Length: 74
Image 1 (cartoon, rainbow, N blue to C red):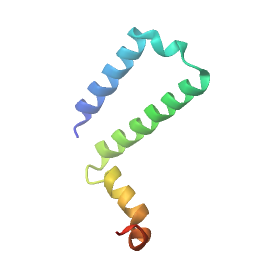
Image 2 (cartoon, one colour):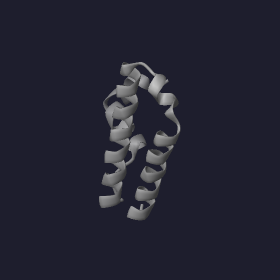
Image 3 (tube, helix red, strand yellow):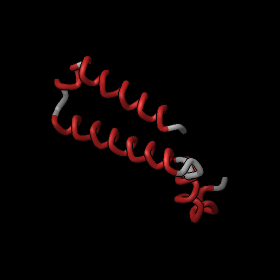
């Protein structure tokens, strides 16, 4: 993913957050959760910008459940 794409997506998200203030009425716990998810997404997008060959979320979940494959099989 090129750096320009990452910058455009994050810039659009930032501008949308400034223009749409409905998130201000959420509970503080919800605001922290949304901010945490955005930070995780930022770190993942920067990681993909640096190394595009990083495994995706699906490979991560498959790796986590691989030891339990025999238990989960029908």
